[in-house]
Each structure stands twice: as structure tokens, then as C-alpha cells.
Length: 402
Image 1 (cartoon, helix red, strand yellow):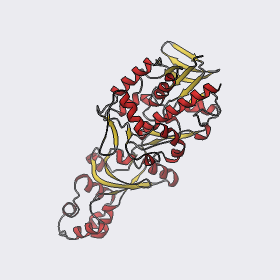
Image 2: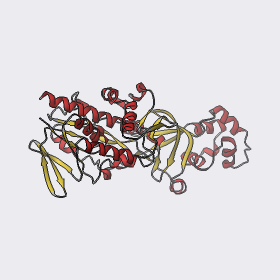
Image 3: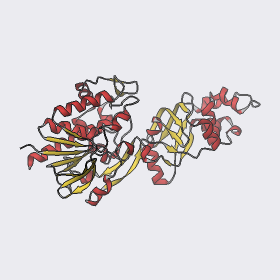
């Protein structure tokens, strides 16, 4: 007998679950609150979709923080190579960029999403937009639609509603209190891959907001990473900041303060820099001494002055040490609505090995709703696809056992 399955949420995790379950012969309906599917997926793909990452799998599988051991079986069952092969099967060829990130050759997400939705419809999946889940009904799930309220009572259901970042695209975390009311343990949702507020002076903010700091190296509890980031009117933004966001966020919580350490001249040692600075004419302006001795001007020189007001009076060795380890104190993460992704979610202790919620028989969950986080670069999307796939197999196995 064909089983009726409701998948609530039309992002990558939900669509992957629909693909697996419909291929197995089940009657699948995907309910999406927004007018179209995969809105966050499309936004992520506007500047070149990071579909996965090419680093060796053992390193890849460790990029998910404390959740790495729990996620590993799903990732092993749908590896980055499998992601590329799956995309190719939908007509999207991929390539490895210089950073190791994997992109579609078309450098956008829309062709892949269109082909994916066509495949799902060909497999018999019903795609229902403008169906916003608004909580539980007796043995079912309630939705608001343009035609009025609807209640569905499937044989099993899978939640793939995302976290709390970019709520205007659909992932607004409205589900948190409904699941908590059912006894599900949920770690508070927090911003991940986010910028931070910094107490810039008004003069620095007005002059340099939007300016990139290029060819720097940054350090935090997350490690040492080279690259560039941007001064914003609020603080600091960009992929290099996102690499440190979890470490900075967690240190702020634990200690009440945190700082990103920046090396403004990663190509020179502190000793070499001190010698080069010492050679400068003491009568020259500080700007000239910085430019000729350290190669610093523009936003880099201004950042040094902003954070070390007495830099111009420092001896060469002391100044060199500041340039090599400039501390940017961060006040707080930017709001979660601005973050690329979110941390926190459904506790792994409340999920069985099939991704079923232990207190709610027949209800499964996947994707960013679960308590994990990852850096940008393809890790987020791969884990959403992999957990959607694993939860679908778990749901199918549970149905077979009934």
C-alpha cells in the first residue's frame, strides 16, 4: 500500500528527502510556506553557489564542530563526490575553485533548482507552495494557505524548516516553541557565519565603512586564516570573519569579551618589520614612516591608528608587534537575521539513528533545524543534502517496519 508522506519545508534538505522517498514509491507532498522553493538556496547561488568542498574527506567530516561524529554516517553516505555526481545528473557540471570550493560551471543555482524540481514532479512529488505550517493538530499538521486553514494527516512526516537566518526567505524558526511544547530539547539558535559589531569612532566609520582589508592574516580560537575582510559601518564582515565567528561568539558568551587578532603584514616577520621601521627618518610623518617602513596606508594604516591611538609614539619593535598582532575587540555578533546560517537546533539526543524525533513517533527532521554548524564553502549545503537523504532513508525504514 502506498504511504502518504508530508515533507514540511522546501529547501535543500526537504527536496532531497522528497527525491529519495518518491524514488522508493511513496506518495510525497512537499509543503513550502513561500511562493517558490529554495529561496535561500537561490540567494546563496547569486554570487556563485558553493555546492560542496574538495578537501580530503577526513578533514571535511570534521568541519561540523561537536556534531561531526553524529553527522559522519550521513556524510559518508553522501560524500562531496556524490554531491558533484548528483548535480551532474541534473545537468549541472561543477569545477573546483582555487580555494578548494566546488562551484557549478554556470556559477548560479537557478538551473540546478529548476532541473531538480522537474525531476521531483516527474517522480510524482506534489509541490505545494504558500502552505505555512502553524503547528500540530490531532494526529496531524495544520497549515495556513491562501484558501484557508488545512490539516493533513500523513503516515509519516519530515520537518526541514531551516534555522533562523534570513527569515524573509522562509527560515524564521517559528517551529521552536511548537516542538518545545512537545518535549523536544532545542539548543537556542545563535548566529553562525556572521559579522560582528565593533565600537568604531565616527570618523573611522564615515571614512572607511565598506573598505576591504586585503592580504591579511587573522587569528582566534578557530585557528589562523589568510585572506581579506571588510570594515562595515557596524564592525567587521566577510568570509574571513565568518571563519572565526563561532570561536568569537562562544568566547563572548564564556568570557564577556573577545577579539580578532589581525596580522597586517603577513609577508614579513616582526623582526624584519622592526628593522624596516627603525630605518625611517624620525622627523618624517608617521604616515610616511608607516608607508615606507611597513607598506601600510589607507584603511590598514587607519585601522592601526584607530585601535592603537599612541602608535605614532611607539618604538619600532613595539610598533611592529602591534602591526603583527592587532587586536580588534568585538562587542557582539550581528543579528541572527543577517547571518549566513545559524547554530543550535534540535538536540541530537532527541533524534534516533533514523533521524526520528524520539518523543514524536513518525516525525523526522533534517537540515539546519538540527544542532550543528559549519563554515561557509560548501559544508552547509552538503550537510543539508546528506541529512535530508539520511532522514528519508530512516523514514522509509520506519514505514517498512510498521
